[in-house]
Every structure is written in C-alpha cells, then in structure tokens.
Amino acid sequence: MAKSAPKSGRATAKPRASKPSQTDAEDAVRTLIRWAGDDPTREGLLDTPRRVAKAYREFFSGYDVDPSLVLKRTFEETDGYDEMIVLKDIRFESHCEHHMAPIIGRAHIAYLPRKRVVGISKLARLLECYAKRLQIQEKMTAQIANTLNDELQPRGVAVVIDASHHCMTTRGIHKPGTSMITSRMLGAFRSDPSTRREFLAFIGLPPSSMGSGS
Image (tube, rainbow, N blue to C red; front, side, top):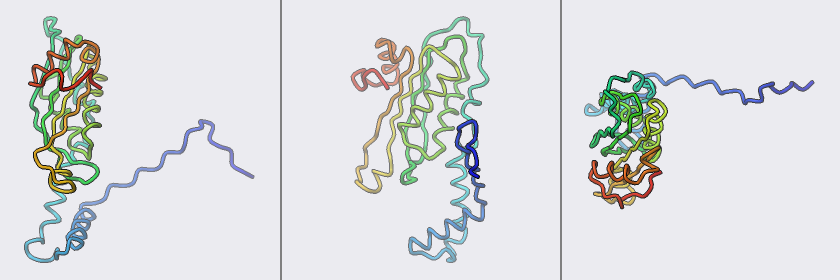
C-alpha cells in the first residue's frame, strides 16, 4: 500500500551535514598541497595546514554571526534627528564564492532614520557579518541594505560598494587596477533624486555614476 503524502505539502528538509573537524580541515589542506606538487611533510609546510585552517576560521567568521542581532540595540533619544546618516570608506575583505579569491574594497552605508538609530560601529559590524562569508559583491550589497531596512525600518537605505576582485586581477583575465561598483537604493534614496544626489556627493561619486539605484 502506497504511503500518503505529508498533509502540509512541504518537502521534508534535509538534515544539516555536521561541520568538519579541525583535523578534517587540516587534512584537506595537505591534500591541496600534494595536488599543487609539493610535500606537506617537509619542514616549511609542516605547520601550514594548521595555519590555513586558523586563517579560514577568521576569513569566514561571518557564518557564526546573525546579522539581524547586530542591529537589535537601537537608540530613540535623538532629539528628533531625521537627516541622513552616512558611514563611508569602510574597508573590508571578503572572498569570492567562485574561486575563493580575495575581494578587497570599501563600502559606504547610509540611512534616513525614522525614529531609531544604531551606533555607527554596528554598521561596520553588519558589513563584516556578510563580508566574512563566501560572497559575490552584488549579493553582499543587497544583503546589507535589506537587513538594515528590515531591522530599522528607516525612510531609506543606501549601500555602495567599490571593490577589487583578485579572481580577475591575479588569475584568469589578469586585469590589475580594475574595480567593480555596486549599489542598492531603497526608500527615499531610490524614489527621491535629490536624496540620492546628496548621498553620492557625501561619498564623492558623481550623480551620473549610477541611475535610480537597484
């Protein structure tokens, strides 16, 4: 007799695979060293697997942080301040999810508060939460803007990221000196050209450098 389908109609979620151990990670590095053509048992490489695993723990520490929790503590005693808040030139380091090569750049984050504001360090922490993951720049730009918009519910949010991708500067097409700019404009930054122009002026970009935002 055939089993009936679940009443909810939802597919059964796959169990989450257990996280590999430190030993698993170090063994993987030794495999890559051998694959590259070297000997992981020679003196100069003996401690490399441990160092690489430690570095990766730092590179990808964003997976251990809930970005929404970063913005939970807010302040309402602002004496009615409702003008633009901009944190610009925030340096970050990330890694592309296609080649695991570095993405290094600067982010500019702005919002128009409705009633609540957050400490400025929280904007930088929000960036770090997403940068310290395997990323593509377009997705990271949207994630930062969307999280800020969802948690603070401001009148508008703007995020611009300008970054160099080592997957195209040190390999592949080999074009050093290039960078990519992405933007995400929400609320007033998207609908009001004067607000958008003011933000772009703050971060030193001409209004013609991007249209109505995305």
